[in-house]
Length: 269
Image (cartoon, rainbow, N blue to C red):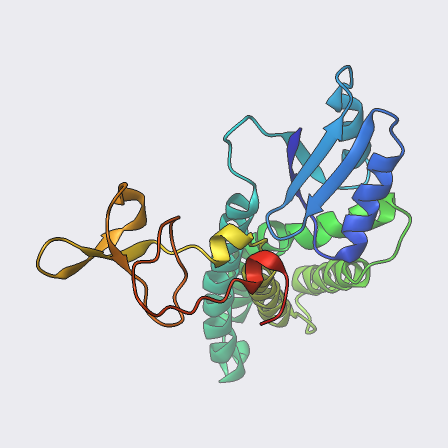
């Protein structure tokens, strides 16, 4: 069975999911791929995945059963993160423009209160929508009875936002919506960069992907021509250059040839 899992960010998340899966008798083997948000379980024939999915959801993760041929959740999660980052960037940029006007002296004018309320309105999408994964991860850590970095972040964001809103109602100083918006933006930007780096560096690569060639030099009668490997037929004549891989099975017709087959035999030259 293949599952799509969202909310995995580190090795502790992997160990948590694996420990949950090991507690079910019908689960014989469980493999979790952090880069793709993918979980593969080898289960008994009579095993029902609903109980396993509910147990993983109870730990703060989102999980669903993948239909055969369905893609993993990494693209959907990357798209969601990018949208939240874009909302934070747009709102934080406009908030800073208004804040600069306030620092330049607009706070002393009759429009200062209107500026503060406009900044608050622009902060709402950042604090409620863009920062939602931080609150969600914090709640997941609370449900697992563990402390993560998102717990103090959530407390700080909620506390500073509440204090700023109270000061806004009172008409006093101490309004920090601009700083909070920029903090959330930079935090989301760094996490998105880490997410893309994980997908690029941790993606599993098979030997077939590493040592396969998509094209080969094929003799077409009077000259050599590049052709896709998938279009090669029996009795075709190909040319393999230095540091290239032999793309298909064949017979060597050159007088001199040296091939390194250590990758197949496991023996050194």
